[in-house]
Length: 573
Image (cartoon, rainbow, N blue to C red; front, top):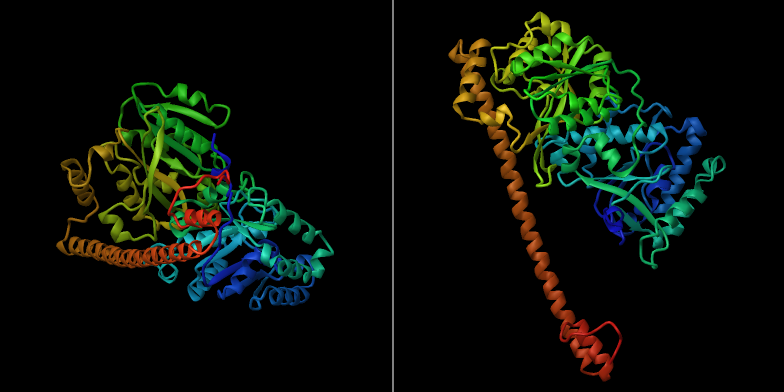
């Protein structure tokens, strides 16, 4: 069992950074959720920018609520909020207009810290805004305008109507009077619900694990951009709040899932468990068992949790197993999950909604997870990398496959029409099919991180047996290039190579910039350490000078503080 200090802070921390950008779904959320942090930021001279996203018309007069927000800001000592005036209870995390406006706001303000309600909140506008912000920040990959504007950005989730499991507690005792005064500015709201009493109770309860000197505290869950880029929105939500069942799977087309497996029962169990956690359940799960050892015993454990069927192919190969699943499926679209990969909780929901919107060939983003045995029969994660995804590039796809098969919702009838998976291919059979599909219909990128392409040490994966540059991998790539015309003309091959070289140069430039930032940060850290050492030495000298002119017992105490002699904690001497 994990100890309490691993789960909740036992010492207060700080939410430093400037500019500080606060996204409030309604006028009052900025005060009830993070008013103390805003008042503290104002005291230390940080730039604070608050955006109230909706007009709050579902619970009051919009103009009256704006005026209350202006007065609350004045009492907190921060600038007047910006009001977007969107209709109350209208926010949708998938709304492209909202995402574009958020992205423009982030690029314009270049915030060091973005505060947003927790995705575990009760109010749908709170959750929608949280998920919209997360999706926009997740697109801030190195080289993007947002990443360049705020490479050290941190995302802080705050609580309003639902408690979170925080990784930061901020002591707001010294500004609590200002927070209460700001809260009371919302007269139209505190007449409807006991917001001030709830605010007082929550801030007092947050003292539980903190020193007695803390009278009031605010709770936050803070992550950096790297965490955002390598964790799905559902993972982020579940880390700091109960989030299961909050999202409605309505509007998602039913999808069949084909799971290819061969003699890896320990990995198959993990893959099927990831299907059990889906926000939108699969229509059917077809486990295509291509191994010598039957997978049925593992599948039986999930019989009451998944609509599961087993299709035995018995050593026919990866491509034939994939084709058997395609032919056995019945939904309009099929999603593939190899036994060593994982679906993140929103995967089928995101793809299913894209299919319901009429997208023929949608795909999402994936992370690459590196796993290794822990010595006790289980696997442990070693690293996560944001490797796969991004906007569709037809010429790039002809040269290298940047779209892992698990990220795609395959249109079943079209896939069968173009020939399905070619059993003659043991490697890159998925790439071959994707190229044939791309020749018939465009791929549509859905910018969401929804699955994990796993690299498992000792798993026997065919890609691991044919690493980059190996004869098997080279032969397989040459065959794909030959089939799809890459080798037909020197000009086409040269254009493709030049595109890959340009991409390599872009990545090399990003690495150079990151290296320069690292060197600069190390230099600043070294200077800070030197300054701390100087101040410690100066403090020791000062304490020694004081001790030399004071009574013996006080001298001993001061010398212990100065590090000149040991001392116990029993007060003896």
